[in-house]
Length: 159
Image 1: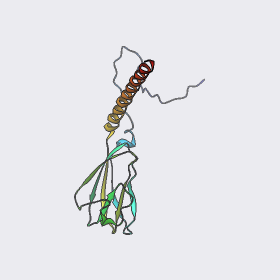
Image 2: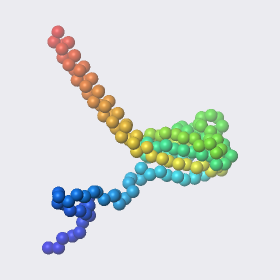
Image 3: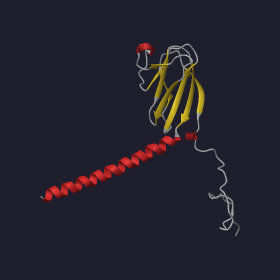
């Protein structure tokens, strides 16, 4: 019977324990979520609110720089029109505006004229670890507090 070739997750190397080896570098560059994304966004002149960032990454630093005259408003509310009413943050020409955005938060953009906005999405992969650990600590503490409350209730009910 002929053996079919397969891709090993361990990689090529000796299985002898007496031979020292170091792991080979990964072939792929990692997950898409851990890569920066840079692009230019052109607003429309029809004064409608559009989604600029859909919140698909776990945590991201979103940097926006208006490259034309404006006015351009951005914010988490979809009600940004009329642009100059103060319902969003107005972008200043040539001044980077930075937002730290958690997953699921959407950034909207609106303008009354055609404008060019430079967008840089940078990941915070370490933020996932921090949030996960904080969540584990909170869950552990809440479990401990719940157990203590149950112990107090059982003792007071016996009195």
